[in-house]
Every structure is written in C-alpha cells, then in structure tokens.
Length: 111
Length: 114
Image (cartoon, rainbow over all chains, first blue to last red):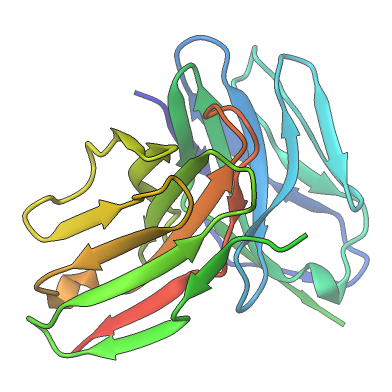
C-alpha cells in the first residue's frame, strides 16, 4: 500500500539557517504529493503540493520537487524564521485513495 | 470564507462514557473526512463521506465508533464507550470533490479519557 517516510525530529535551527526535511514515498501509479504544516494550537494547513513528476511546489519561501526517480519530495527553505516553528507533515494521495501522512517532523527555530 | 469548524476543542471524560464530536465543513464541500491523530503521529483516516454516503469506513472501529452526515453537510463522530486508548486529537477535513482535491482541516478536538 501507499506509505510516506519522513525524517524524524525534532529539528532545531538558528534563524536564517537552511532547512531540509526529507520525505520519501511508496505508491503505485502516480500519486500527488503534499506538505502540510501544523502550527501550535492550530489545524493542519496545506503548505504546498505537486501533482506530477518534476513539478515544484512552492509557498512562503518553502519548496519541494516531485522526484519520481528517487521517490522523494524533500522540503527546503533557504532561510528559516522563528515563525516557521511548527510540525511539518509529508503526505500523498493516489488514485482513489485519500491522504496518507508521514509521522511529522517538529521544527524549532531559535533567534 | 469560514474554514472547517469543529467543536468542542477540548473534551475530558471518564472511561466508558460516551462522547461526540461535531464538524461543519467549508460551504460547498461535498467530501468530508474524519481523522485520528495520536501524539507524535500523522493523521490516520477513520471515515470519508461523499455527500451523505460513507464511501470509506474501513478504518473505523465499528464496535465503539459511529459517524453520521445526515444531510450531507455537517457531521458527528461518536465514541461509546470511550477507552483510555482513545485519547487523541480528532480532526475533520473537507474537500470539494474527489480525494485528490486539496483537503482543508479544522483545528481538531483533543480528547482525554481518564
């Protein structure tokens, strides 16, 4: 079945550092890939998505590229801010199957 | 535009008691989802509705969990009786139509069973 594996946290970075959160997936066919973010006390929000190979999703300075050859969708940001502190979830959906989430990676950014 | 609304936000009950959660999706969204999120884990689907029909309830523990979406709009998820292991966050999400449409999540209900 479909599954998502993302790097375990927590990840602690200084402000303006470069961020990478790794995500790999297993799926049949051609899934859509997502990154969701959960800020403290809030619900999950869609951060970005990509629906086909080589697509790049981007939002709020975050980027992720759908790499079919490596079955990956790594999240990157060039310069993180304290306000980026949150839990980040990689997810996929494919065919008639709804979202399957990874376990989440907690990011803490310190000033 | 209002987002997905859930209530209550927090609930504390004794084990073996019943509990119910309510969700109102974004207006016009035909598909509604209930997810369970355990601490330190990603959300896991419990049930998916398309309009008033439950099209995927394979992960819903039907011995104690039930759900309804009678008029194809808001939905209720019930647990009876609750067990200690049911302590978690229950998330509701909605989307326009198919499973590949973007899902929008509510803030969740945090359940604590004592």
